[in-house]
Amino acid sequence: MRRAGLHQLFASGDGCWDAVNFLEPAGETATLGEGVLVLSATPEVGRVAGSSDFAARYAARFGPIGNYAVNSYDSARVLIAAIKNAIAESKGNPSRRDVLTAMRKLRFKGIAYGDPVQWDKKGDNLAAVTALHVVENGRFRQVAEIPQMQRAR
Image (cartoon, rainbow, N blue to C red; front, side, top):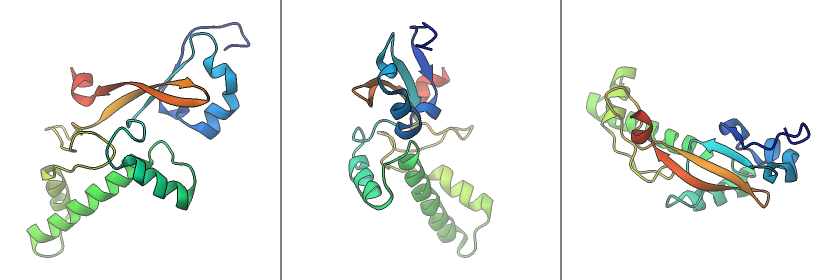
């Protein structure tokens, strides 16, 4: 865009929330013109209690944290909790429906979102947010957060 003389804001979904595949190749051009705005499905690491500790452990074992690492960690923990609860409820081998029912009853406080995960009648996660990031000094910096409930209106 910048080579073509376009100076408008470059806005993108979370596919560009990637240091290796977007920030590094874009370099200084990410801050030229009106800059870059990238959405993400989770607040930046450090905004939710426990997310910084998780990111440090993850980076030590696997390398830099990716866009969905925090969400994936919480998703696995929610599923495991739902399976355990479904086993207790069914007193044996739960069905998928049993696990889904148990999951919808959960109120799970993880590290991806500030609010506990819970679902509405359609199955949407009410704790979910969309975070907006700009590029500054070669890094993403969160500038806003839009709650799921606000997006649904």
